[in-house]
Every structure is written in C-alpha cells, then in structure tokens.
Image (cartoon, rainbow, N blue to C red; front, side, top):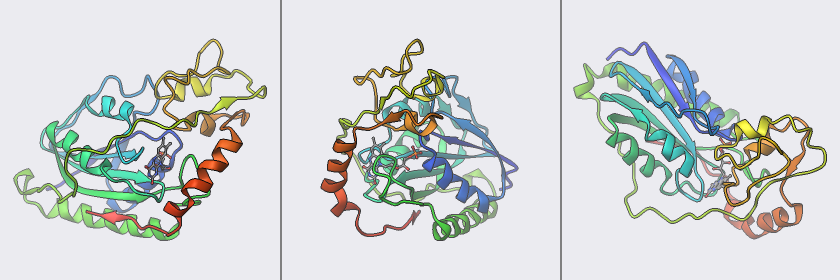
Length: 259
Ligand SMILES: Cc1cc2nc3c(=O)[nH]c(=O)nc-3n(C[C@H](O)[C@H](O)[C@H](O)COP(=O)(O)O)c2cc1C
C-alpha cells in the first residue's frame, strides 16, 4: 500500500510529545501536515482522514491516561480505514493505560492502529526526571522504528491486509483525578497573553493573564513552557516535596516500547 501523505496530530503542552513524534517521522519519510490540538481553540473543527493517508497521533500520559481535553479533540477525528501510528509519551514513571485508551478511542473512529509506541520524554513537571530525553539513543530507536512502520504499510497490498498492532491493556482504565500542583504568575507577567491561547482548558483569563482558574487547570505546565518572561512557576516547596516523594519511581532509565 502506497501512502503519499499524512497528518501528525498531537496534544503537547510542553513539547515533549511533539519531539518524540518527530523522531518517528524522521524514519517514516512521508510528507506530513501538522494538526496541533493542544490549545483550547485548536482542533475543535475535527478532521476526516482518507484511507490512503497516514495518521500519526500522539499524547502525553497523565496519571496513566490520555489527558481529558485531548480525548475530547480526538473524538472529533474520523478515519476511513485509515492507518494510524499511536504514540503515548511519558516521563519515565509509567504510561499504564494511555496507549490502550488511545487504541480503543481511535479504532472505534475508523482508524487501523498499525503500530504504536510508548516513548520517553523529559517529565514536564519534575524536569530532573528523564532530563534531556528523547536523547540521541531514543532518536535512533524511534527513527529506526519509523522505517519499520513505513515498510509494514508499504508491504500490505491494500487496506484489507493492514492489521491492528497488538497493543496491551484492557478496561477498566486506572483512575486519574489530577494533581494539586498549579502554576501561578509572578509580577514579572507582562500580560502578553501567550499562555491564554496555549492553555488547553481556558484556565487563564484573557483580561488578566496573571490569574489562573485553579479549578479548571489540568497542571499541564504549558503556560510555564510558553511564557517569554518566565513569569509562571510552581510553588518551589511543593515541587521539591513532589520530587523527593517520587524519586524512587523514576530512578531507573526506562526505554521506548515499540508495538
Ligand atoms: C499532569 C501530568 C501528569 C503526568 N503523569 C505522568 C505519569 O503518570 N507517568 C509518567 O511517567 N509521566 C507523567 N507525566 C509526564 C508527561 O507524561 C511527560 O513529561 C510528557 O512528555 C509531557 O508531554 P508534553 O511535553 O508534550 O507536554 C505527567 C505530566 C503531567 C503534566
């Protein structure tokens, strides 16, 4: 089966998910459009895919699940026996049900999940964990897998021969109810509003970008990542406690898993 075009769909508040996906694309060597569904106003129109294009769809793992705002946007995608590569990116603890949840969601919507990857990226909250990843070694592994995926698709005579990859995991999915770490703006905030547009859930007021609705905030850290004045931060004491409490779970280097 010959694929000439594709679209990469990603929810990536701090850029780690996008970075890991780009390593796979390096190996796929198919021209891809980008469909960023991160910001609240992005990806709301949905998108329909043909059977002759490839979808590469990636999300970070939050508490072992697909982030809720990403689920809502992914539900707006429609495949027509469209081959899809699924990517769950996590910060070196575990991605648990993320990939299985993604597989269920997208196969119900007309995608054939031909391959999947659990990829490591720097932890977007506790940045010492998996710092600098994906690194050179990750890049090589993901790029090589991109080549294998391209070969897998090319060697299928038609979409009837494409098979769902064997992605482990079953319902019930684990429960995730968020975390109490919410970024706040300091007086360095210039009110530029970049964080307002980037926030996936509209938790930052357009009139007062230095205010955050902590009830809505999903702790994605996107506002910290895009702030040009470095005005948005987590409470350093709470962050230190979280790092100390969790360091055992992050100690050993985990590797990318390929399906
Ligand atoms: C709210 C939240 C929950 C997270 N939960 C987990 C987790 O359960 N396991 C893990 O290994 N990493 C976890 N991470 C780390 C992210 O999955 C990882 O850093 C990912 O690269 C972030 O994606 P992004 O850079 O595209 O925003 C979490 C990050 C956030 C912000």
